[in-house]
Image (cartoon, rainbow, N blue to C red):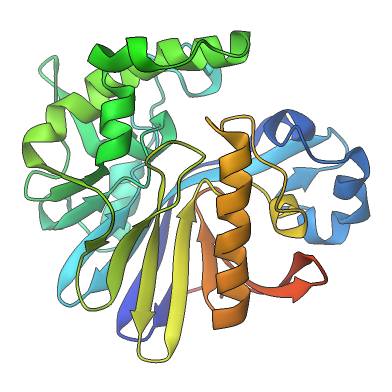
Length: 305
C-alpha cells in the first residue's frame, strides 16, 4: 500500500481497480499518435500497453489524515451499480472497503468525503446498497460536492444542457441519471454544496477547476514547506502533462479543461506542488517541471509504504 507524508498530512492510496480500459487515443482523442510511442519510457508499463495500444489507469481513493480528521478524496465506482454506459464497471464487486480497512479506516471513522466532480468513478462509494436502498457508506461524514456539478447533473435541470455531441456522450448522459440517483441524491442530506472555494482545515482547501465538468475542483495541500494538488480528472494520462492541450473524451468542455490544466500545471511546476491525479496507476503522483512550452515529469511520488 502506498503511503507517504507531506508536512503534517499523511497520504494513503487505496486502489479499487486497475487495468486496461480503452484504446489510448479514445481516452485522449486530441493526442498525436506519435506522442505515446515517443514517450514509451514514461508511459510503459503503468499508463500504456504498446502491444495492445490500450490506455491503462486506476480507480482509487486518496486517504488524507489531517488535523485529526480522516478525509477521502473521491470514492471510486462502488459495487452493485447499473452502469450500462461502461460495461467494464457494470455491477462491479470489489473488496474496496476491506482495502480501506487495511489502510486503517472503517466507514464510520471518515469525517469528510470530497467528490472532485460528479462522474460515476468518483462518487460510487458515497453509498452502498443495504436492504434494497442506497445509504451513505460513511455515516458520520460530511460530503463536499461542488454546487455547480450538483446543479448540472440534477435530472431536474437536464433541459438546460446542450445536446450530446455524439453517441458516446449520449450514453454518458443517460448513465449520469443512474449515477445521480444511486450516489448523489442519497447523500445530499449530509452534503455541503460549496462554490467559489472551500477551506477544509489549515492544510487543505478546495478550488474550482472547471472544464472536465462545470464544477470540477482541485484539492490544495499546503503543510509546512510541502505542497500538493489533487487534480481529479484534469489529467488521465501523463501525455497530458507533455501536451496540456489534450483533453480527455470525458470532458464536458474540452477547451476550458485544457486552459484549466495549463494553469494548474504552471502553478505546480513553479510552486513545487506534487501533482496527484485521480487515475494514474503505479506511483500515482508526479513532480512536474517546465519543458519549453510544455511540461515533463521530473520524479514520481514514493511508490511504497
